[in-house]
Length: 167
Image (tube, rainbow, N blue to C red; front, side):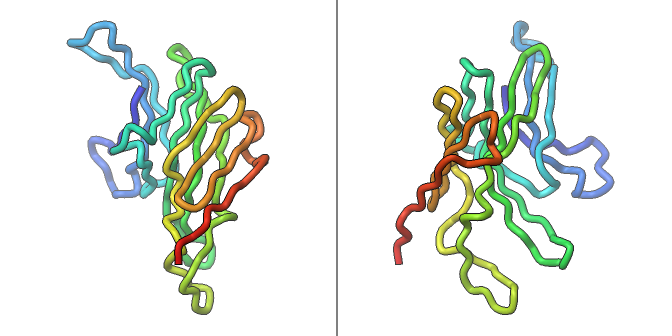
């Protein structure tokens, strides 16, 4: 089970790049074989789990994988929007990945330096950095907020705790 970046062999544009989850069959270490993959997000999305194993959270007892995810996209008004959330997937070696949902944090990002609708900064780094899974609950943790939701209802958080922001 791993995470990486998918780039097609003959990409026509950079927009074909994606975050990718993969399952490999490794019973023969000399010939590992990819059995399943799942693309995540848009072309410029990323996860801290791509370079920090502590951000990659697999809960084998429940067959769940939680991956912090961040991305930039352009909204219908041409404004850049930042996304930071926790993406949760069911993982099965036979059936592959099943998206379970997203624990979003966009409503708790506090922006600064806003002038006529253009905002370019935050009071703290808003990216979801880590996750914790306990029984049927998933916790997303950023530098400014911790949030919890039931795994069957990730879009409806149960509680949110804001951290004190240093001046």
